[in-house]
Image 1 (cartoon, rainbow, N blue to C red):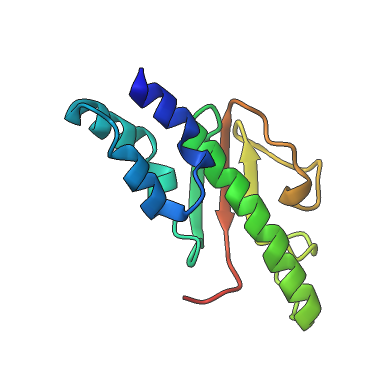
Image 2: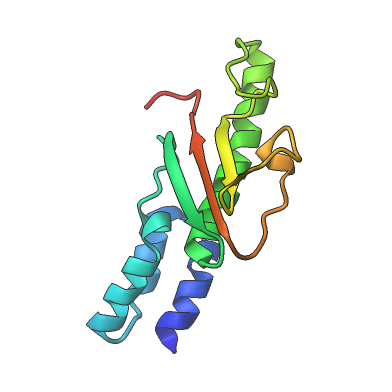
Length: 136
């Protein structure tokens, strides 16, 4: 029960990955700890300093949902920075968004220009590429 609660609340912990690992130390059994690490792998391995990559996220998994929300927020910030610096448009749709090839349940997402405007459903598979303008 403790690992289930921790799994659902892990994306809500502020302080980054180190704070998440410290919170996970309260899991009483090694087997439950390992299960939590495996289920939260996408969140624990997410590197906000270098988010460029291909993502396939199960939105019913709180850790995956948390990564999707973080990337939407990061995209909004990076879009604003690019606009203020008057950088060249390199986005797929001309909106300065860093998301590319967005798919939900295998279907292209065409309803919105930017993923920041996309309402994340609570279930289903979200797949996309993210190409950050920041360099590590």
